[in-house]
Length: 341
Image (cartoon, rainbow, N blue to C red):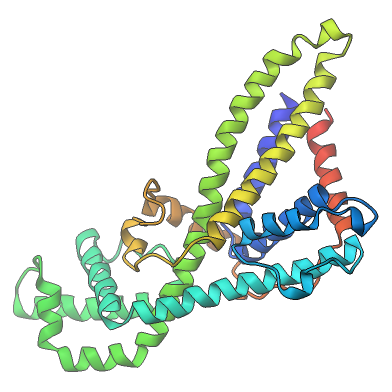
């Protein structure tokens, strides 16, 4: 029906946005959405002395895993001004979280882990044929170029010596020319680690949003099936079933969008660290043991990005915050989209 089709289009549009390079901004928008939700729930009254401020701060901590500073002990601004300021606070928390990930990553993963990544990558090139397989993360441009360059030398070495590559041949080859390899490795290893960090951060955020969205969407579809059965009884209450269906479908859909944002924000801000770099190949994340991903899905997404040409290296959000009134207009527009026939 029209209602489900429109809801599905909105969800798919969101997925395409997640698969773009602007995911950092999208994640910040979800943080802003949660600020709106909390303010509506606990601080919707016109008068500040009627706000449930303690409950607000408690829920804020549950979401962002961070207590508000002392200046937030009591509210001093009007609702819209409070929301605007909280937008900036959550953006600072978001950047602080990324800095924490980066600091931990720099301390934990160094030369040994990077050499492991290079070794695995070159073995995959050997296994899958260097002309038909490429690392599915365009953000790691320099590391890929380094690995493919040394793999070409490895291939030329075996052609010169008339031998066929075998398991363990790449480490043996690198040991034989270790001085030259290590010189180049040390020259660029800081850049390589930065590329790995940025790629892992992007991958974790992307998969958090996709996993949460997919699971919640499945539950939403089941709820919509139950709703169809329920509205069949609306006629007994002298209500038009189609009007009742549209009204309740919108309520369910708004709940879905809020749940996706809430769960995604919680997962990100409560995460302790990024996974081991080998996660890029095997996608086994100890902090999400039920999640399993494959190269194909990521590769397809990145290929879509290259086709659209929408590549952006910036991860700094512009300071053009949307007012609470404007965000409410956006929700009203969504309501019109999903509520009307």
